[in-house]
Image 1 (cartoon, rainbow, N blue to C red):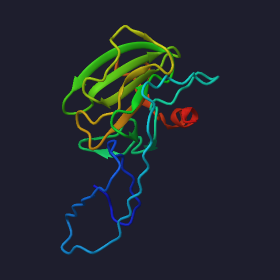
Image 2 (cartoon, rainbow, N blue to C red; image 1 turned 120 degrees about the horizontal axis):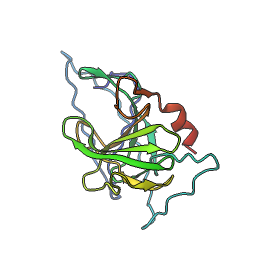
Image 3 (spheres, rainbow, N blue to C red; image 1 turned 30 degrees about the horizontal axis):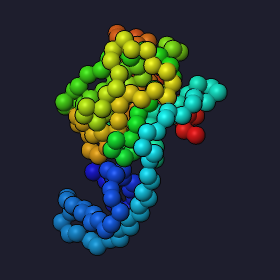
Length: 195
């Protein structure tokens, strides 16, 4: 749901060159007013076998390895709760990588929420949660050590998601371990890794 009068950016799946149509459905108004819709598109061809980038000197790697924009962050309203992470909108199939070295704690599926997801326990003690991965794209298993920049899955829209994006959370005290576990705003870390 998008309020009128605001600029909106959406991530689309990779499209072949050509002409495409965009459909909008407007509801909740007694009268529909005409407006202006401008669609900008940029097509980037990815190398056939992209190698993960070397980690920067501080060890942090941005988790989405391709074009992206920031979506909803901490506190955005959801059905029955508030958003606990940061959405990163990207094209379907964009690689999702580990920001720091660590060990995979969980790989699972939640139909009504996170979809296919991965949890990494990072070497610095925090836990990273990656949700809405593309079906059959998870490349790691629980207990597996991972390095910064190692592929975990691909951007998708599994579970309760509208459009392809990565939902990313950072947890202190473990990922949903006990009452002392809590999420923190991942945006400062994401912006520092977004080079």
